[in-house]
Image (cartoon, rainbow, N blue to C red):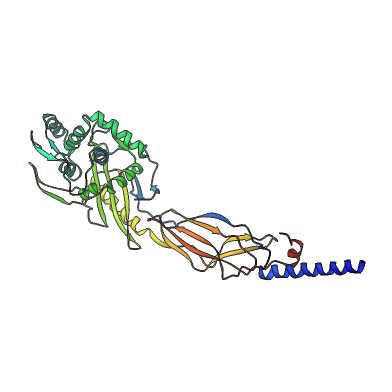
Length: 401
């Protein structure tokens, strides 16, 4: 009986050994595997040199991206005529237009004529009007944005909202709803009055909203309007239009505000147009705002550079196996892309549960790069630095694992 028991015990031990060997080297019976996990890497872009204006306040951003950079503390100051971007965005919210639509007819009233005469006395920018003159909504917006007609900015706001105070209430609420919190619309819709204030960062946000509206984008890309009622012809005050990819947006200039300029320019990245918006405030005058903006735009466009975010020569993650072994994980190709200023690239690492005898040539996870500027994702396969084989001793001690 004892011999029979010993013989059975020997057979049992042999079976356990055989089972352990098969399991260790062929993953045949017991599915030993590590736990999968995810992690996120934030990789900083290479620092760049930006040609900020020597004086005043400036900011820049990219349409579709949250990042906005600036040179100095953002302190609200007078917007001058860049306030007309707020006016036109507010009006188009309640009276939307599509491309090639003229919109409703606006008849010039005695009140509009009085507004014109007042701006003439204040030496503001105007476009002459006549009592009873009929202009389309589109024409009024052209006169507002190109020669910067203060009188027609007020006329449009009164037509759309009933009064300038009603307009200001609407516009200030509109700004808050869009996360623009350091901008305040004051007494007029033109920006001549110093009560309308903003920061360069907020003007970038406003500019991004404006340039994404096809009707506004079409108007600010126009160099000249001909055969306009009463005045005849007028030109766009933005002389940077067409240079360095500039496609708009709005100039401003008063004695109190100095020169102010919001620009939009296009840069081709990977055959895809990327729109950069800049804002310059508190310049000496409009000419200074335009010339300093030109240098800023040029430097920002040159700051798009191709960068290696993760190399195939580095270990990007580790997996810890049940028996305590730590195995590195790597890419077989570099993760590369375009970077801009101090933007961070987000790479999401996903590691699958890894089984016994996983070969170093088998895919064990992915690294996904959120492509900047178009918000799509590219995935790259991940591999183990070495083939996994559990120690036989550990396997025999954890046969029920």
